[in-house]
Image (cartoon, rainbow, N blue to C red):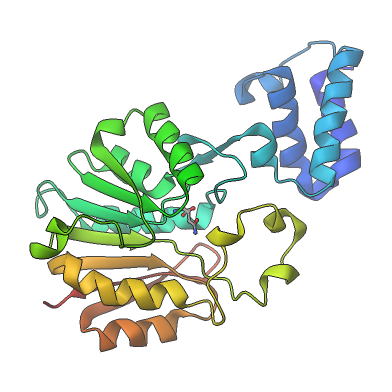
Length: 283
Ligand code: GLN
């Protein structure tokens, strides 16, 4: 059996739909680079097939592939992930792309950015990577998540540009930040699933941390708090940007307008779902 035949074997178990996962698990198991996969004539040993089978079994039980391989990609960068953090989603890349349009370095020298609920650090680290002189503070309530985020900052060589803080939203942010509104951008992909809906989600998502998903009764708990506090922390014309869930845009737009944010825009993702909302602080 060669890797291509092994892929067929994996596909037989995971189904055509999960072909990509079947391939990633082989690459992980045989330590092959994606570029080597299709050309490899390597003959698979029984021991290797058995260890592949163990990974297939985990996947069949609903464990997401990224937790099995402890790795995923976001904005073309590699991230370590484990069960303490949400697996970065491709849709979240839209936030990064919007920020890159909004903060041209010429208008915002040394932009200061606050990322709330950083999880694996994917947002903060991508911004640190793609905005050369950005200064970033990234918070999370979970010490374990911050451990993962710090590891990822190191992996991507941006540790010197990000300060990680364990904080429940803003509660441990040093008071100096309030005395002089400090941020050009506050960004967050907060938990936004209604808690009554979490149980109904597919079994893969059930493996992800509940605190990274649960947005309270209406899914909007974190938006309410972040909108109100952000006004005191953003510079005049500073941006507040969120990832948003299905059907939430109008409610969040209202909250932002009531808090006197202006130029509020909603951006769709590639599947034409409303995914991002942002506005500017009028203070
Ligand atoms: N900021 C991380 C992400 O976008 C984590 C978000 C979260 O835990 N809700 O994936």
